[in-house]
Image (tube, rainbow, N blue to C red; front, side, top):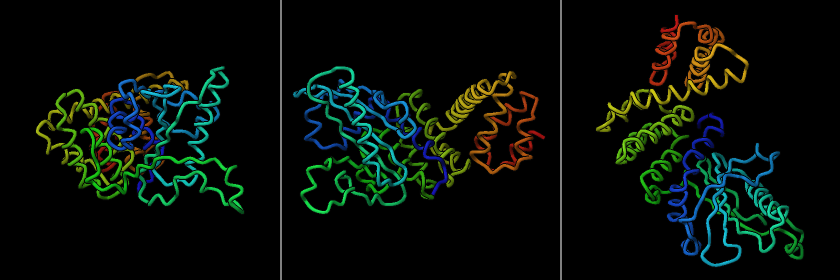
Length: 331
């Protein structure tokens, strides 16, 4: 299993599920038809944890969407999407914490009337089975049934991508590709599945959209998987008719994005060397993500003074098969 931080998985999840078209597709594809039938999904909007208290922010990786119901009071209904890359017994407490925060915010703001419905959905893609109940009341062991009226009772929906049959991976091209990637990202099988995922995205008609999603996918793969290397990525791209054309574009976009992140970090640390320091930082981050570096190698990277050398190294690191391909350019 990958040792990558849960934040890496959270970031990819948010990149996809903060787009209303993908949330709408997921809801219509996987949630109970009896619920979907009452929704006006054209009104759907992402509201992203606006009601989470500031001191709880560290504990949430939520995507929250609001839509309208065709009948009922109030007309707004919320879906809370909670992403998990490992099984968590107390995920039910986490979603209840958000739900209570949202309801309390309405009361605090002086809004009267019934509280809005919030339907929690846990999207899971860990390697282990999710062996926990989805019922909140199952967290308790009361001495007798007389205590049951005092225990909150609700369930969350569990969408277990890792153990979903491939025949049940449905939806639009993007939703299918994203679920396949989440299903295999922590598995050695990703090496065999990556060409299929890239090919699936390759059927997107708009070149700009295709480039954007391939960039997001590759960034996630390089950060989260220990089973795929540059040669696997290159092989997957070579199977696309437009692969040779797209690869340099995507590599450059990833490099530019990383460079900007590095420059921002440099500014926050009070560094005044601007673009040069930003390139050093992002090269170091990319190398640390892919390879194990010694302290001497880290010093080598952070001491480079020539921008052209750094540019060459940044172009090389994306598809380098070992760290010495990059380090050799710096010496």
